[in-house]
Image 1 (cartoon, rainbow, N blue to C red):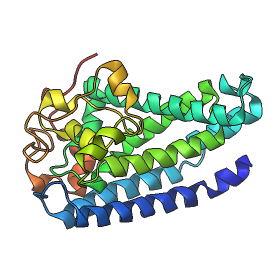
Image 2: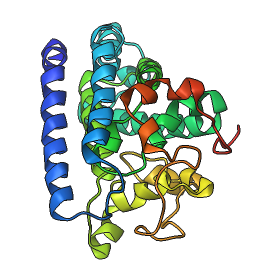
Image 3: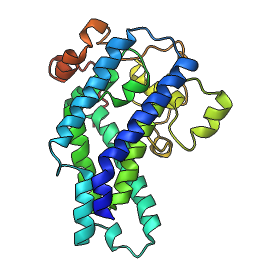
Image 4: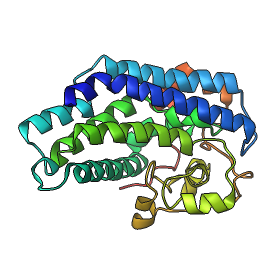
Amino acid sequence: MNSLLLNHEPFVRAGFFFGILILMAVWERLAPRRQLKTSRPIRWFSNLGIIFISTLVLRLLPSFSAMAVAVLAERAGWGLLNNAPLAYWLKVAIGVAVLDLAIYLQHAMFHGLPILWRLHMMHHSDLDFDVTTGVRFHPIEILLSMGIKMMVVFFAGISVLGVLIFEVLLNATSMFNHGNVRLAASIDRVLRFIVVTPEMHRVHHSVVIRETNSNFGFNLPWWDRLFGTYKAQPAAGHEGMNIGLSQFRDSKRLTLPWLLVLPFIGQTSKYPMGP
């Protein structure tokens, strides 16, 4: 079972990735929430180029993955869940929730520590907000994130199926909640109790520092409410808010080559929260 999941994992993830990407792109065309201010082709080339590079780096390191650790942990009986007398489906569900909490805490940490914010601010430097912003993460940040997930999987004993479900959900919801799509207020009000919605996550991409440092969730919206980092709406409203960071406003310096070097030459400004 595990070897089957491991062998088919790239195809499962790729299928969901392109399916959600196309679905969200069509939705953005039919019902956009905001008018884009910068060139769509240039942004899409840069943002999709970044995820291509990150994926290539991970594929060149096949053993450096949460899936590989999950296989080893299950075989050796490592981790809490692998030794817990619980039904398999419950272990999978708990594993997904534990990984989601870990990513929430990781996200807050990348906003808190200046050295990590240098990597993460590339994601926030996008001057517009659409489905491709959801995959705009520096390759080094992707590697660090994978390392964190590997440690969580090892100590928590999360199953291979749990890791695969989480990875697919994380990828899908990241593209969904970065979508430049219009949702009815009544639907959004209910939906944001179940999943992080575009209206909720868009606040996180505001140029205003106190709004940037809020709404850290990707999948489950509960962590922000639990830890006091939830902000319902931006002060200027969704159509009036400025997207991005105050120190990066020149779109000509946000092309793919610049994005790769931005963490090493860009200014962090006052965005890091501190410990």
